[in-house]
Image (cartoon, rainbow, N blue to C red):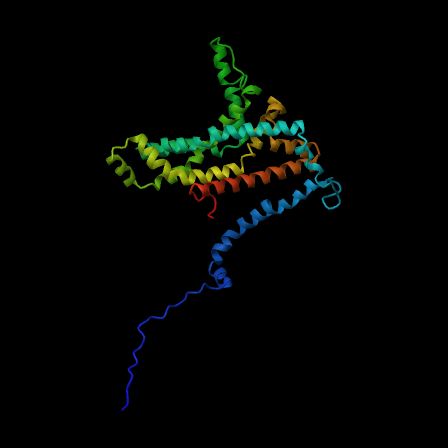
Length: 322
C-alpha cells in the first residue's frame, strides 16, 4: 500500500532585501546637484578650513619675513598672556563678556518679539510693507550704519542741532565711553532684528491654526495661547539659534567696533577680535594674537557642545541628535 504525500506550495512570499546602490552609482545619479554644490563647497574649504592650518603660528615665534616653516617653535609661550592675565587681554575679555551679555539679553529676544508682533497683523499688505522696511537695514554695511548714527546722534547731528535750536543744551552719545556698549547694542538691534525675524515668522506659519481654535474653545485668551501654543511651537528654532549664538558669543562685532574705536578709546571698546587685530596685524605680535584667537575658537566649540548636550537633557534636538 503506497502512501501519497501531498506537497503544497509555500504560501509565504519571499522578502526582497533592497540594497543601497553603490556609492559610485549614487554620485552619478546626483551629479547635477553635486555640480551645483561644488563651487560653494570649494569656497568653504578654501576660505574656512584651509586657513585653520595657520593656527600653527600660535605655537611659533612667527616672523613674516621668515615664513611659517622657518620661524622658531615657541611651544606654549604665546599662551602665557592668557594664563598670567595680561592687562590688555583682561580688558578685552571683560568688554567681550559685557557685550555678549547685553546681546544675549536684548539682541537675541528682539527678533522673537518682533516676529510675534508682525504675525499679529491681520492685513497681509501692511505686513509686507512692514517687513520690507524692517529688512532694509540688514543690507547696509556697517560703514553706512555707523555714519547714520553719527549724523543723528553726533555732536553736530540732528538731535543736538534740534536741542541747540530750542536752547535745551546737548547730549553726548557718539564718542561717550559711558554709553558705548549701549550704543553698540542699539545699532545691532536696528540693523539685524528685522532680518532675523524671517526664521521665526516661518516657524510661526507652521503652527496649526486648529491649536489656536482648540485653545480658544477651552477659554484661553491671547496671552495663554501665546504661552501654551505659540512659544512651544517656536521652542525648537529658539533652542537651535541660541546654541549657534553661544558658539559665536565671543565675536561681538569686529567691523562695527573698529569703526568707532578711535572715538572712545581702546579701554572701553577693545574686545578679543580687535585685540587680535591691534596686537597681531598692527603690532606685529602674531604668535600671541594667534593663540588668543585659537583659544576663542576652542571655547566657542565647547560652548556649542555643552549647550547641545543640555538641550538633549531637556528633550530638544539641538544642532544634532544623539
